[in-house]
Image (cartoon, rainbow, N blue to C red):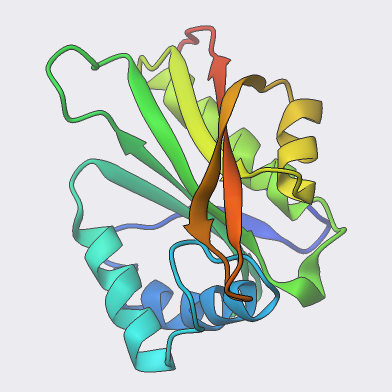
Amino acid sequence: MTGAATTLIEQVTETSAAATAAALAPVLIDTVESGASVGWIEPPTPDEAILWWSALFADPDATTWIARDGDRALGTITLVRAAKRNGPHRAEVIKLMVHREARGRGIAPALLAALEQHAAATGLTLLVLDTETGSLAESLYARWGWQTVGGIPGYAVSPSGALGGTTIMYKRLTLRDS
């Protein structure tokens, strides 16, 4: 699947995981440096970022996509299926990140579209996520059809050290033939 003209969206596989972890390290570092915590207070070192991606790729409930322009990683998104027995129909969307130099090229919606297509084709009917309250990401998710459930104030410490709220959102999917 392609997003921007030269951008390739591909699913991370067991075979591509090690190279992808190294390629995505700069995207994670840039995301934190640009003010989104995505679970970090300070940007990780390249080695820490590679270890973090490698651990995520090892999770059997997680499926990750990468946006590339040639060999350069531009962005990523991950889907984590619910591990609970009462949740085979739902999953959480985590870590939608696009490098600052690649923003505005349609990469985020292309990544999300690939994830949603895969989710529907594999029988998922409900996706959930949380995002920083008042952020550009929150307004983009709303534009892309996500519904707001509510918010939690003072949820996470941002890289600036301030406490920020998170907004919980969901999207229902229609099952499709694979």
